Image (spheres, rainbow, N blue to C red):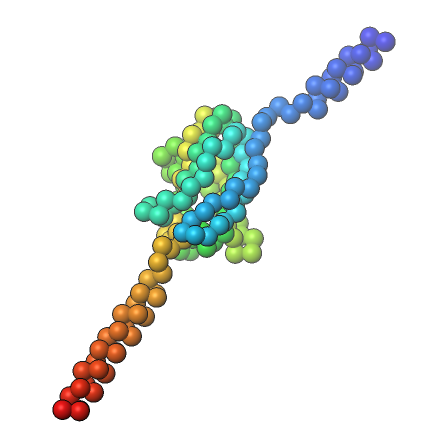
Length: 156
């Protein structure tokens, strides 16, 4: 009877998770668009935000244990030439692995205990105003100005 009770206690304890892994999907609003970012780690996610100036994705964490942090996001949200992201863990550059699912990167990095911030730096982030549209409008305006000046000279 005593061994059965001990066995039941061991079985009950083994079902309690020994880590507090957090995983989920966070929706980020950037420049009028919504993007779903999925993540997993052994800790608590405080926030995920886009920094337009530094073309990066900022992740705030709390209560982190030494574990692997994985984040997946649309390539329209943050991209890097030749998949050369820079990943900073509490301000220090670290190695990472990257994989793609339907052109969306998934970055995995080992994080030490008590990590508070992860920054993923790319080469482009959701554009505020596409520069290509601005260039096309400039060229069209110049062409229209040239034609309007040349037509005026013909009619004089």
